[in-house]
Amino acid sequence: AQSVAQPEDQVNVAEGNPLTVKCTYSVSGNPYLFWYVQYPNRGLQFLLKYITGDNLVKGSYGFEAEFNKSQTSFHLKKPSALVSDSALYFCAVRDLDSSYKLIFGSGTRLLVRP
Amino acid sequence: DAGITQSPRHKVTETGTPVTLRCHQTENHRYMYWYRQDPGHGLRLIHYSYGVKDTDKGEVSDGYSVSRSKTEDFLLTLESATSSQTSVYFCAISESTAGETQYFGPGTRLLVL
Image 1: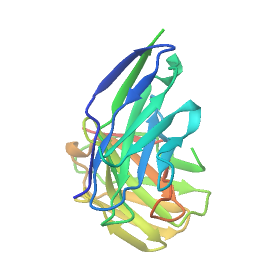
Image 2: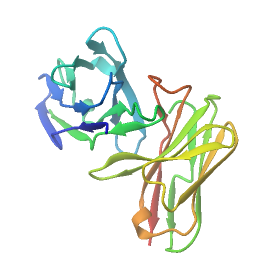
Image 3: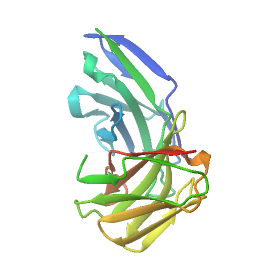
Image 4: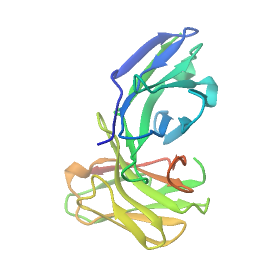
């Protein structure tokens, strides 16, 4: 069965420092991978996705993610964190057995301190 | 929020009462989804629709039903609400499946007392 794991409940980083939010996945074939961000009392906003091609994917708000097939990872990164990046981040993988379904990780709360 | 509205945005109800949540889209997307969000679980799919009157169950469908009589509207009904259905409910849409991005509505916060 397909699954996705976000091993950290919370990530703390100082403003201006690089940030990484980790995601690992398990699928039986080629994965479709997504990152979403959720600000308080809002819906999920799409950040970026990997379907095929270049392993480094660039997305909204200066975020990027690196697909690593050998480590089955899709970590979210940003070179310089902003206080306004503080939010809840979700990694998701497309369920290849059911093309309609996204499987979400449990979420990682990012806290960027001034 | 990508032309998606949800109503109501907040609701408090009592155990055993029926509740209907509405999702409305202006994007004319074929696929619509209902998720629930609970701490420690991320988002879990309740039901989805792949066209008018075409729906199917997700991973946590027990106690929920859905209907889609028009492309733009997808209704989620709790036939007899229970406290375990206290959650935040999100609607999502996508143009197709496979690698297509799902876009989410603002959510409905439901409290069942």
